[in-house]
Image (cartoon, rainbow, N blue to C red; front, side, top):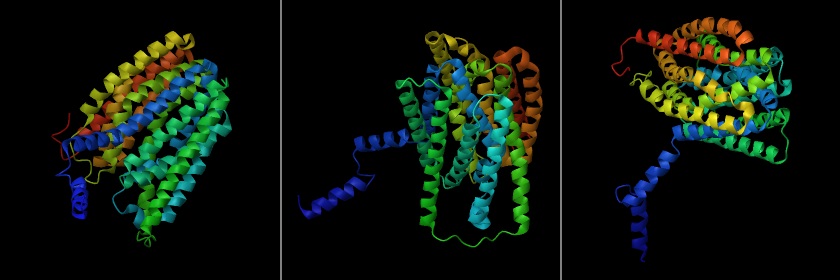
Length: 422
């Protein structure tokens, strides 16, 4: 082959118009495989696999693992000041105008508060280890907040790939413990803690590399009034997300307190299985928040719910199979069935809540979340002490439905009306 032919071949391989059809099909397949939605679904699938593997633990030991997880995740949500949602929803140029030192300072405050919140929740549950709850809450806060900075740069694929990699490490860690015969919820919790910190370090490394490439940061241009406006907006947003997370997770704290570690292990398994169906809704909500046009596109909720239903039904069927193989978990499928309406309502509510935040601001989403928690928490406190996990599942579905329909009703009042609404 002559030199000119080599050049022609190189040009042909890089020119989309001359790429063979088989090459274009392969490239298209690869892009679909690494699409953010698929990566997120893969990450959630690995997390779900880890939850399934934890069924190897006796129910009480799995309950200890679940208690540590809920104290950490709820602690990160309560103490983390909702910085991940706040940062990703800020307009373009916000970080540069405020300055990097400002972002690092508010992250430091959120980390401290997350640890305190996780410690209090561990005490309230009466189950779990403070080291795991507090340490994992801090790791989650760092990961979620720093990830939001990467998502602002539309690095959806990289962030979700990190989630998937972390899920793979967690699965490998659980598999190693199972092979070694270490069926101890406390030890499995330590592996989960290590994975949270591994994820946090990885995403921090990604953002630091991007900062180095960006060069020196320009001097902040914001005024005192801008910072005060940030505090008000963050406070309003966090009040809503705080109320929403209490609706989503506080029932598990009460199950641990009033029903014990064993029933919590079964209930948390059903909750985790049904949450797998919400993967598409989570990605769609993050895309809406990161959209700079104010979320004025068509409402994707119908498609999100339609996609969630078969996944939710498959999750319930999977719980039935697991219950047959592990009799301690034989009632998990029934809890999943009771949670099904709430899971679909949550999938819809995530999209509507994100659209509501973009179109009407933090105050509208806060009102919806507070109204929902005003229904949910009294229901949990009134039902769970005497009806246990069955009461928790029914009350949860009711609360999730209230949140979804309240979000939809508030969104309908947004102006201008969107003809793409379902």
